[in-house]
Amino acid sequence: RRPVPPQPNPMLRWSGYRAARVARAPTQRWLASLSYVAADNSRWSDPSLYQATRRSVDEASTLPGTVYHDKEFAQLEEERVFRSSWVAAAELCDVSKPGDVMPVNVGGASLLLANDGGTVRAFHNVCRHRGAKLVEEPCSKRRTILCPYHRWGYALDGRLIATPSFDDTADGRRIPEHIRQKFCTSHVKDFDKSRNGLFPVRADSALGLIFVNVNGEAPPLSEWLGDLLPSLSEYESSFGVGTPGLVPYKRKQYDVPANWKLLVENYLEYYHLPAVHPELCNVSGVDEHRRHQGRGMYMCFATEPLSRGGTPIDPGRIPPFPTLRPRHQRMAYHVALFPNTFFSLYPDSLFRVILSPHGAGRTVEQATFLSHRAAFDAPGGEAVLEDMFQFWDLINTQDIDIVKNVHQGTSTPLYTGGRFSFRFEETLHRFQNMVVDKMLVHEPTRYRIPDGDVDYHDLLAAPDPLLPAAASG
Image (cartoon, rainbow, N blue to C red; front, top):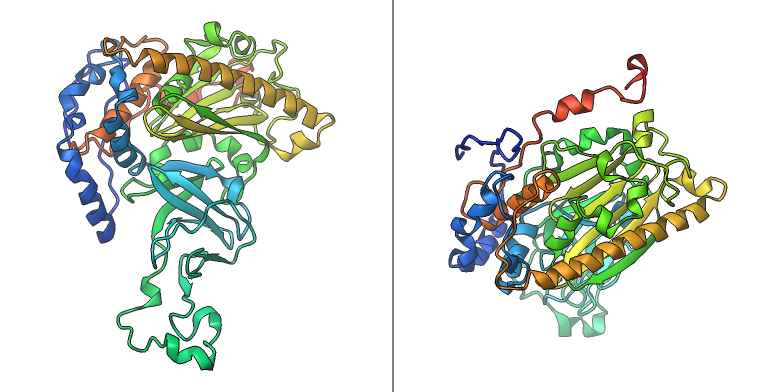
C-alpha cells in the first residue's frame, strides 16, 4: 500500500485508496504479460506526465489534449482501462431470455453473451478449432453456438459438444459407415473436448446491465460499484435482479466523431447546462444539483427537487417506480460508471448510454430509454414516453454537438490542459484520476477504488427537507 499524503483542501475526496486484486488464471497471466511488454516502453507510463491532474482539485489541471487524439494512448486504453475494468457490455434486457446470444466488443476484444437457461455467460467470440468468429449478429432461441466455418458446436455454457467429421460422435450421430475410414481419427492424440470449450470471460449483472471483466483482475462487481448499489436500493426491483425489470421503450445509436472520454466528461458536469441545455434547466436546474458521491468506481450527482417547468420529462406525467418513497419521487440521479456508461435516473424512467470507443477519434453510443410496465399501461403512457424520448434525443444531440467542438479544439498542440472549476468539475477530477490509475500499470494504484465524500453517509440519512421530521424517510 502506498501512503497517501495529507491533502491541503478538506473538500478533496481523492484519498484512502486500497489495491484490490482477483487471482488470475495462468493463461490470462501469460496473455497479459505479452501486452505489457510494449507498455513498459510507452511514454504514457511515466507518472510525471500526470502530475498536474494528480493535485487536489482546487489546484489541478485537466489532462492534456493529446490524450484525446494520440493513437498510442487509445491503443493502451484498450488493455489498461477497458480490459482491466468491469465494463458495461449490454442492457440485461438484451439477453433476457434463455437462448439469447449477442456479440459485443470490449477493449478491442470480440466477445459473445449467451443466456444459458437464465444465467448470462460471456466468452471470447472465437472458435477453438481455426479461430473463426462465431457470432456476428444478435440471435435468439439458440441451444448451441455453431461455428460458420467447420460447424463445430458449443453449448451455451461454453462446452464443446460437436466436432463434425472429427470424431465418431459428432452431433450425437455416427459417421456413415461407407465414409468412416476416410475420416478415421483413431490416430488423433491428446484431443479432449472438455479442454476445448470456449474461452470464458467474467460476467456479472447489476443496475439492469451486463458487465464483463476481460482480464479477470478487477475486484468483485459489488465492490467496484461500492456505495452506489445500496444508495439506489429502492430502485432494485425496477432494475431487476438477474432478470430485467426495466422495459426498453426506444433505442438509438449515435456515431460520434470524438473521443469517448470527452463524452463521459461532458456528462459529469452541469456547468454547461445554461449554455448548452436551456430546456433541461426548466426541470433540472443548476442550483438544485448536488454531489452524491460514495465510495466506488463511479461518479454521481443528484437533482433535488426536480422542477415542473413544462418539459416532457417533468415528474408526474406517468406513474413513478412503485417502490420509491416520496423523496425519491422528486429526485433524479445522474450516474457515470467507470469507464463506459452513464445514465439519468428519474422517478419514472431511465435514459442510459453505453459507449464503445473505436480508436481515438470515434465513439459509438448505444442509447436506450427505459421505463416500467405501469408507465406503458397508463392512459396515454406510450405517447408520454415518446415525448420523453424525443426530449432526451434532443439533449443527447446537443451534448454530441458540443463534444465534437471540444474534440476539435483539444487537437491544438498548445492546449496542454485547463484548470478545473472546483464547484462544478470535481467529478471530472475523479474520473480523470481513475483513467490515470489505469494507465500507470506498474503503480500500486491500478486497482484502487476511490473513497466517497466524507459527509456522504450523513447526507443519505438526512431527513426529507420537504416533509415534517416525523414523516421523513
